[in-house]
Image (tube, rainbow, N blue to C red):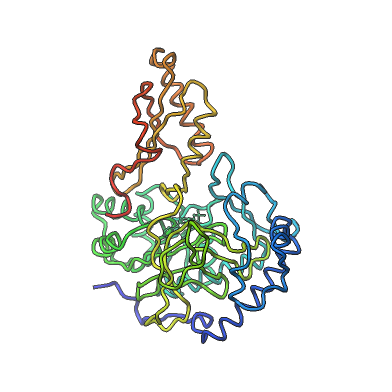
Length: 438
Ligand code: DLL
């Protein structure tokens, strides 16, 4: 029932199939070198190592990684913008940014060698889900500070496929291009693809040539995969990544679609107990911690992703020796993702507090409309403001929408409500319909 590729040519990526002892030898050698690099060049990391009485020489085997200190998102905020860089600026060729927890984003950096690794893992990702030279890839991830667009772009070019750098948005144009350019693979968020399916139905367009979707940047369920695959006839693959580690291409589902292989020669995965920080055994659910084994510009040692998953250790039928993680269903913090943009309630709060006339009582309401995630912010205004004329209230509402857009890069609807009208017990964010389990 799939629109299978003619000839079924799949490039094979040797590092995906290394015998484990060989892979682990590479991991250890790279771990020792990245720890040395971070120790020598990043003050925060060096002081944390010193506090524990550790030096790079303390890492004698892979298990020693558990002795190293964690890195957390707040470390990127506290050293904003460049405090965790391990390369001089003349060697940094690219910067990206992602949501921080307050008003400022977090910044990540790449040397040319880092970009090469990124393209390599994206080539391996495409290959793992059966995308190859000859494919026409519509890249609808956003281009810009978000890592999705450029990450997938350079990988697709290195693969030798034809890439259409259309970026996100403008659904009608997306569908026109898909049909007229003979698109065979698409990269975007799964929720946006659902929206494309719906729009295509209305415009009476079918997905006859499209074969594969490379979907990520937000959590999605197995039920959503089934719905996408049934409604469009394509194979829908889950791709995972985060700016702090590299961007998309940390892990990907192969054609078996049973967990995401982590590119372990570049990213070392651990699962920890969120409360205690203890490393959990394989198979146990917990928080994913990643160490970049080859990053130059911004090595991340034991970065706490806050993404909840489990390591799957049994051998995959595809033959890859890379371990897998289960698809990520939730996070261990309060971050949520709207149209691929990461949002922390604390960012919304910062935006609201910048504008006078509102009370610090608000509620973020999450809904889904035609496959697209929607976010509305209800904000209580002060009694004085509430009795103002409509024109003034509208001005305040626009000011708040602008302030939120400044911080999140996302336009969301703000509704002003009377003082004391938001239930104090419901929490800052409320999902009206569950976006993930559809
Ligand atoms: O979302 C990188 C990316 C781009 C991944 C395109 C895949 C495709 P950030 O903006 O830094 O980077 O957001 C990272 O998004 O910690 C997860 O919480 C979430 N996330 C990313 N991919 C998935 C996925 C990009 N496949 C954060 N499933 C991560 C569930 C995902 N959550």
